[in-house]
Length: 581
Image (cartoon, rainbow, N blue to C red):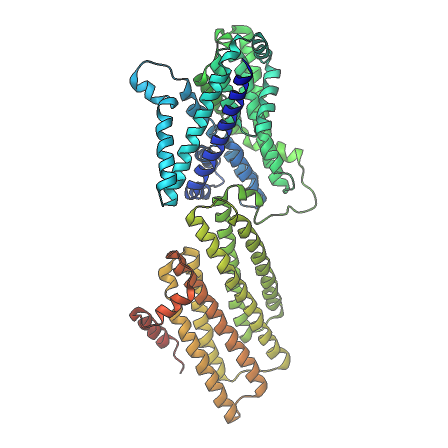
């Protein structure tokens, strides 16, 4: 093996790692909706968590990414430690898919159909399709598929290049002696763990081992402990990710480490204990790519079979290693670790925005009720809610801006833009809730009270505004443009009601049935209620326009008010429903 072989090996390794990263990134991006669906099925049932972890890892081709995601979920309070354990076990099995794909490079046969299965036969075709899709297609989905195919092609080309470059190593005695060292189980485990910890990918380190197996010098005795060690090395990523998280998130990373360490120790002792008695003949035989895939899968399945029934003990052990303290666990609502998986991070942003919307709408309804029946404790709760909504807006705005720098799909990018526009309206609704509350407090402190006519009129307006808020909230939660279209006609009715109530108040002033002081409170209430309806109109307009890949809310409002028959019919129905007596 000369200098040029070394350079070829380095180039092949670089292409291999780049292709794996490229393919994984675009698989993750393309499978955004699938990830959301799989992760939404997480429950306290361990087996379902196991299947979810296995499925997600098989899709994104990275157990490290899955475990980092899980640490982020636990830190955000979305998953309990017990739920996370099943997902981690599933991730260990899901990551074995890569080794089976890479084992195709070792296929040898004169049969035409078997030759077609060799990467050297079909990879050029995939690369050609990939480059055509990437350069010619206008649709983002097809471009992403093209990048996945190109990533796979580069990955396989790198694998073939590495295998060819190391072929000369079989003639070098030093290489044979080095591999002989790894037949020592402890050294083999340490070597596998160190390599995987450095490149932070068990799939990549298994691929490198599969490339080295092309020399014919890697035996089962050397490969088995290295593969076991690779499972330990992959836990480094989750351990690093858990730094600065709450106790349960750190315990999740510890469970990942314990699962792989305990599994490795137990099966290493069992295998070599039996081997000492039986003397397995295959241990000294050379292992090929397919053999490595089989060993990798069998080991992970055996570890899961061994420890799955004892997941509760792993949980208790992790709690012993990281004990409870008097300080409560801090939940990070939006964990930056999830930014590594943009589709999942965006899904979390949507959930947080939905919580924010519910809180803001409830605060407004509570404030309106306080005008009739003021309560100091309720008033304090509304103010605390407004502070909470402000914090939600700050968190979401900052997080969504960071997320905007990620490689999002077109649909996810539109969702991020939509959320950025909507959270401002939710925050303003909570501000108006405090304004309404202040009017209620002024009446309470000064002993003011509206006339019976004014109370009845105000109840009609608050009922209309309440329905506007319900429609806007339901449309947002369900992403329903049809429901959103019902908001604007009712908002127009609210505008009309406001003017009618203002006129009636002036008439009461002229008759001496109301005071100037109450008039100021009345005007403030009408203004705040009408502006809440305006914000609901903005929310509905944004939802409708974003469903058409646009954000021209003013254009939408101009169109619907310009003579639409359905708008006019809806307006008249709401006008009859909220007619003043």
